[in-house]
Amino acid sequence: MHWISIKRIFKSGFVSFWRNGFVSLSSLLVMTITLLIIGGVVFSGAFFDYTLKQIKNKVDINVYFVIGADESNILSMQNALKGLPEVDKVIYTTSAEALQNFRDKHKNDTLTLQALDLLDENPLGASLNIKAKDPSQYAGIAEYLKSPDVLSKDGKTIIDKVNYEQNKVVIDKLNTIINSSQRIAFWFTLLFILISIIITFNTIRLAIFISKDEISVMRLVGASSKYVKGPFVVSGVLCGAIASAIALMIFALGSFWLLRLTDTYFAGFSFLGYFSANFLQILFIVLGSGIVLGAVSSYLAVVKYLKD
Amino acid sequence: MIFFDKVMKVYSDDSVALDGVSFSVEPKEFVSIVGHSGAGKTTLIKMLLAEEKPSKGKVFFESKDVHKLRHDEIHNFRRKIGTVFQDFRLLPNKTVYENVAFAMEVSGRCDTEICSDVPQVLDLVDLSKRAFAFPHELSGGEKQRVAIARAIVNQPDVIIADEPTGNLDPLNTHEIVQILKKINDLGTTVILTTHNRGVVDSLGKRVISMENGKIVRDDKEGKYIL
Image (cartoon, rainbow over all chains, first blue to last red; front, side, top):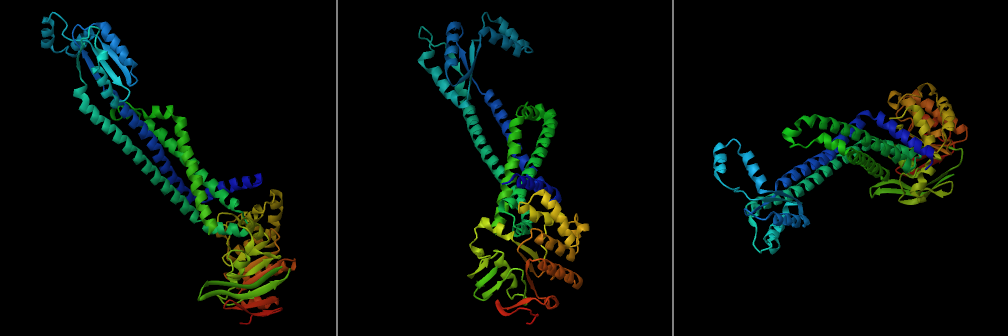
């Protein structure tokens, strides 16, 4: 196509978008709502991920050692555990630290502290706090702790207790909830996006339906298919671009407004922080969806009337 | 120049729009096609513009079968024909100037040509002062004059005017007919469909009379007789 035709198509697209006033405005509003839904899905996905991570972080298992267990054995076990691919973190708490933690925790409970002072030696053993990369991997780690590899040199076990069995029910339930909520979130996201795309597509189709006679006149005057389609696609792209600018502005203002609710309602998740850290990605998703949606729905709608 | 060869158009068994129509139109001719509503005048025009396909027969324009043109050739073919309709068919979101310029733009004419030709054509139809008005701001007669300006701006070989005076008062009707006559005098073939007796009788040109999809009369210097 000649550059002069391209220039005319762009000009005609911009002018008709402006002159169609009310029709353009309604397409713009519907497109903005669609993009808000798409962007909202991105934000809620990030919030959901953050919440799941927080919950996952709360799940752990503790290995309590017998009193007087050799520290070198404990440290070698810590290293061995760190070497396991499913283990994320292993934190060692010595028996002295455990005693100090206990004292701090009960600093207002004089009776308990007095009773503790009566004892000649530290009644608390050392412990290892293990965090897995994924909650489903705790069963494997608990199994490893039962294996002969973790025995001390003289063949005696130094482990007093592993609290996995007590936590097992909670961990398993949490795993099920996490998995099913991820699955549900995925289908809901897909459904929401699909519905909003269909609504936008139909709105643009209706807007172009109003121009049905105009399309037939253009054909009658001798306009080629490309020359008829072009301005409508340009208008659609323009509508998508403006709608994404509005949607991004609403996201920015909304994130800023939600800042003060971060700790109260969102467990420390900052929408503004997420928005600024991932701005380019969000811009790409929102602007890209707007432009593609505008162009494709306009194109398909015009093609329908060109065939008639 | 234009040749209809035994053209039939059947929509259903009891709806025959054209029934074996044959005639030819020579260059620079002014032909009026007359008949009551439903006689087949508009179907005939649609056949020539390749808007509809005949059930049987062929339509030739400059020895080319119009209905054998490829989809991407049709727009080039239509640029050779200027069209004027009863309902004007202007682009509502474009000004008078832009409506006329649009016909030149789609033909790939450059901006300089458009800037020089459009004002001349608007002057010819006496609309220079309304160049920047939108169609909804114009009277019926003015709208029809815009449609004529758009039809002639590319200097087509043929002008087809399908009931161009159907929505106009006698004064505007007279003006439009005078413009069409002037266009014909300048060498463009004009095909006019109408059921306005006064218009046909005042022209004193060739008249083809249609009834129930058939040509019943073809007079060289005819009158409206039905």
